Length: 76
Image (cartoon, rainbow, N blue to C red; front, side):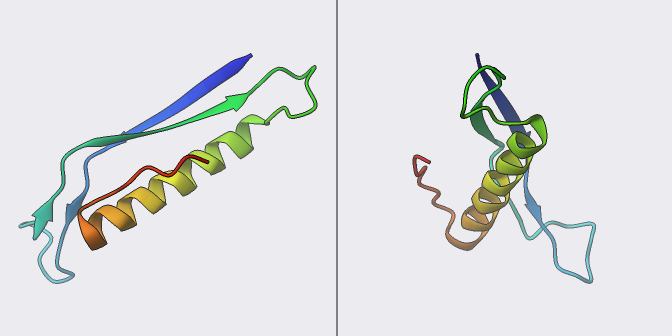
């Protein structure tokens, strides 16, 4: 059985000394990761690892959005 986890975020960039006025606001985006949850398979992914993979993908996406403004999806 394949499951998918999604995280939708809105990123705002603030200066350290001004938390009221964002320097930049990015369009909301969604990061998705699929994983195999069928325990009868050899390549099963435990839920904790699936969450970790999703958070790593989310962090990568946020950094690339902030640094370049142009994120290109790379297939895992």
